[in-house]
Image (cartoon, rainbow, N blue to C red; front, side):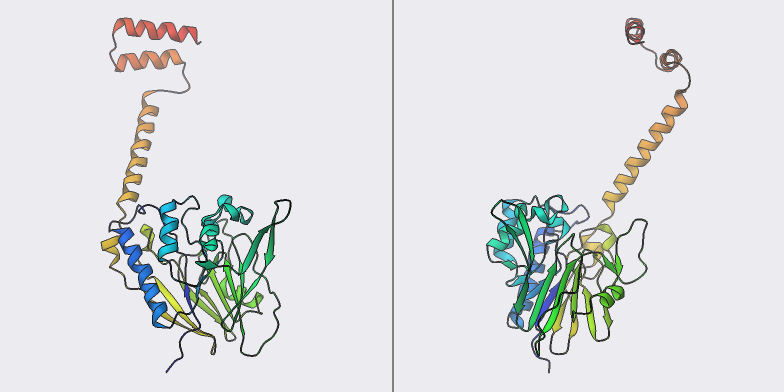
Length: 318
């Protein structure tokens, strides 16, 4: 029989004020049920801390209502880091304007990094290690580069890094992509027994020499390209440095997701393109505006007085 997990690992939340375009169910109700499921799972295992990979919010300009909901409903003891969606202008220097600061002040979350103002009001970024259970947890918010940071070797302690950066497992490259393969990151960050990454909404794990990288993926299916995504969490056992995957109960994608908004946009673009092609066929850009006006009036009968006024105005702006 396994011991209770040391921690529960969850991915990007991207909590919306409104309903995402792709959702066709009662999204806000679904959101509440899913967060409650995570709370119940935490209670089941006697409240281990939750390691969250960043991007709690979809937009840093969230409402007071959403902030209050987070303080009242998010699980206890969340250890997180700022993701790009959490930060104004995608900058850690703007942390003090972010919604994370509010829920941090409420003691709902903790962060293994300190963002403090000095006497001149300049933000100082200081690395801080959180000691939690038998874990030394170090955070790398959006915009910072994950590095090996030495910690005092202690028997029975594991080193954990939480980083909000683009990491992938398979060949998912695209032009201009700034990312790193999971196995390469494990090779670089040798000081950590467990690495939790966020930003990539696809869920996967990677192992190297008994060390683990977990990219838990997004908790909610907010986009039409997530029909195949199965939201999950991971239980982490520090004694053996192992994980256990648990899928979150969800409805079939067809009942909660739609591509209608994408098709609507595509049809709109097609109509625009058709309109432009029609204009190009009616008027020749290379000939004078007089010829264009003449062709217009020939194709669109207009009152004599109006036509006369148009020609007069054309002469004035010639």
